[in-house]
Length: 106
Image (cartoon, rainbow, N blue to C red; front, top):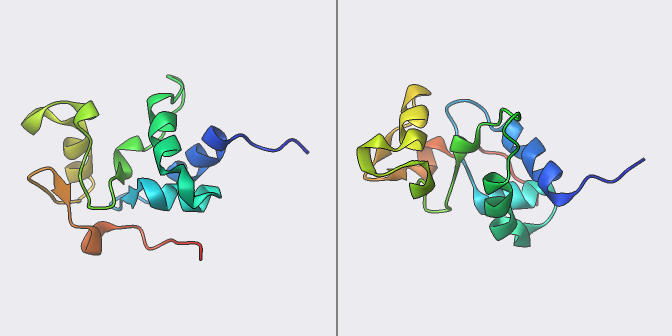
């Protein structure tokens, strides 16, 4: 059986984040198998194939900050998509206590 590469493992985790929830880069990294991959998660997000439909907008920093890569200020697509799912975004942040996906590996 072929072992999956890091990006594929990361994509599988991102694909499981439920609608209306968010996960931090570090959380995705841990669930993908390596707690030190938080930066790799960022690289993976930038490298998502165009034909792959992943809920990338559900990945935020550990503080709940959304990414400026989705566009500036009020036009930020990540904020818009999260709000469409019922996630409150205030001043570029999501309340992690309320909206973080409660899935962890210890």
